[in-house]
Length: 176
Length: 179
Image (cartoon, rainbow over all chains, first blue to last red; front, side):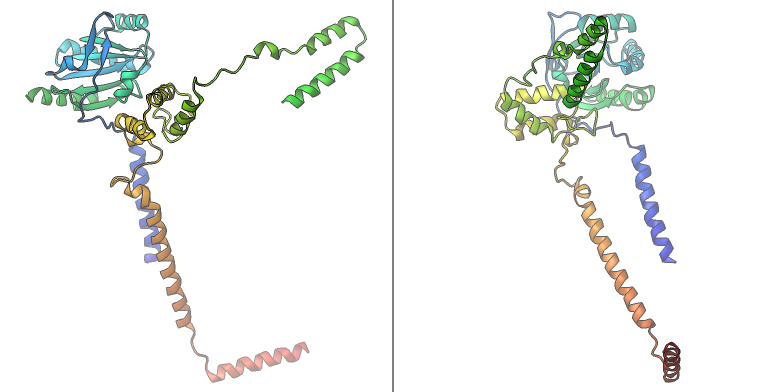
């Protein structure tokens, strides 16, 4: 009896592993930056090139950093959600315009709406590298102490917004 | 490729020679004018400093392109890899050691960026899993073979005297027939 049972059990274990493997997303690379201080930057603002913004400027508040570009198609999917979120005024959203052209980016915001408290530009993607950006759009939750708490790779969806991002933002806002 | 072009040129010149009318000859002659000259451009140097380029290539051969995943950064033409190459070139120019550059990337992109994963508790199975499977398989095979040999030995029932004689008689009978 064991002659048949053993291979069957071995096969079932293999099936379980393969099945678990199917549900994993290979693009979801865990970020080593979670629970680490957000890398500092000093970048030009999109609307006012003469003004700059640094990560330090945002200390003391919970904020979202949304990496986007006008050439990024998936950004269009998530953008209406950010516009809604900005209108609700729950949490300030900062836009990092990644490897883009200023005029095209401004045009894109006029067309799809501008949910960003401040937009900053990273034309060569250097700050992007500091933040471990590899697939636009990406969204970071940064807490009052300037620590990265969460990173969403790929477009934000209603589900990820309601189940992960908003509860986390509320929780972090409650902390001193 | 070059051989093929030579062959073609030779074939064409034969054609030109055999063509009767002047205009056909002229057209065929024009065909002989090499067109490649226009496309030729001196190859641009890959980097200002070949030493930097060499080190950058060695480093990027061990690094995974995160957007293409099954390619190294050295192989990849993705925008991401171009940025990485630029970044690594600059780090090399800033006199960083290989270890410092790898650390810089791991800090930002995690161990996933390495094709050669470090030995950690989380990567234990990755490093030793195949070895463990191999040893477990060998032990199972050894035990199985030993048990089977034992079974075969046990199964050898001593033959009775009668049966032995009968067998010999049959064998002799067979011999006699053959002779």
